[in-house]
Length: 150
Image 1 (cartoon, rainbow, N blue to C red):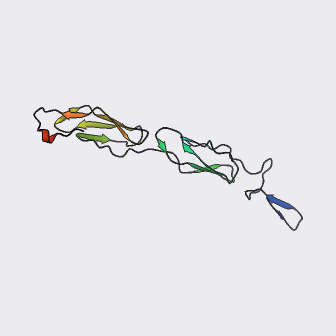
Image 2: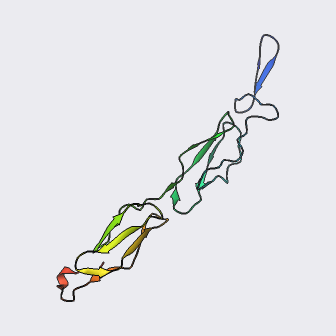
Image 3: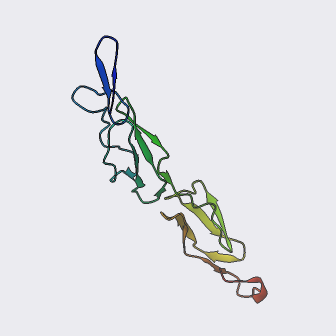
């Protein structure tokens, strides 16, 4: 701590973080940080000036959330947990129409001409497309050279 004495004889003592003390405590206390899809289980210091690193706790979310306790006793957050993105799907003999490439998203899948089946897919929590069903040649007379397994 640091103490400063003015010309009037009164003294001001700052706490170990260089902040003015508040009545009833060492420094403003933010309490436990709370952010959607994240946990801050390793956060033990909740006084102003402290920083905590959290972890994304919900399936399908990635990131390294950080929380900083401000002098106003409020947490501010840098980086949050965001949904994983599977990118655009690609599979031989299939076409896709997607409106959401992120976790939980689905796409309408269909077979290219000359192939039939009931393909399906969904974006998994690991950021990888989960494919189901498939497409097989619909014409038994198709040249073998034109067909390659998916």
